[in-house]
Length: 405
Image 1: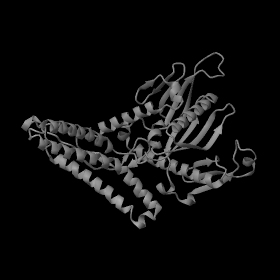
Image 2: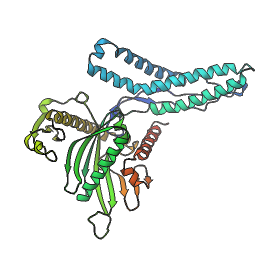
Image 3: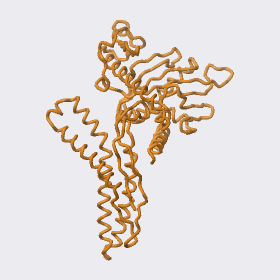
């Protein structure tokens, strides 16, 4: 007997990397697609569970259509903040609605084919159409399972990446530069834009710390598993004996938040200007374009000096500050949900050792999922898709397991 599954509203859950959202929780499973009866073919039986599933998906489609109509109202599209909010909400529902519509079409195609199977003239053709529609419905059912998992609302956002050299001194700083290069090369392969917000370099060409923004649709969804400690094992150029050194670099990944996403009391901010340091010639010596913003209640400090415009530096610094405060708030929420963390690929904690890059062996190992690839050169040149895709698949599998799928 074919029985498809339904979804119901769930309580607030914490996403893989610092996100909280309302979503739909899967409360049904795909049963075996057979009730072998007349004509020796399986037919779809409308069970209560199936009806409940359809009701939930119809509700989602109805909400999608309502959002579509609201966005056409003059008072909505004249309010850019409200329009953007509704557009984001609609975009989150779109994949579910599109999959449901394909499922609904396949269901109708299968029913039509089943009726034609009683006609000897069309029986062979109808059987093929029936089986094709049946297979499509089974495939779409699995797709809906994934789509209706709790979704990270930050997945579509731009991403802020902060890299800091850890244990290892100059060697750690040099590896921090390697990671910065790896991430920006990956961004270039996706035709995403990257911009440095703040950088502190060493005399040897390493990076003590750097904050940069990658702008692109879905950037956060691809980078969010990079938070944590990255360990490198290699022989430094300055090591005469050829001894392998181990150094570490800490990476923090934040979704870029707007001020409208997280309210900050202006009276809680202390804003200072100062002269930028580093490259730039006479300009950096004469113009106080760099910005330092301190959130007094938490002591969070953000500096931005990459732009020559004080206004642009202030705007960028505020985005980074909002993103950090948002991440910290989500971290507090996540700390109270230990069971939830167990169903994630890693905790996203900056102190968690997530990956090792072993140069002598040409090996990269991700410790969270036990993935080892002997492709260190390609990976450090930005070929990250194989690693990221494996992490995403592992995360989905854990979430499906947690929901009983």
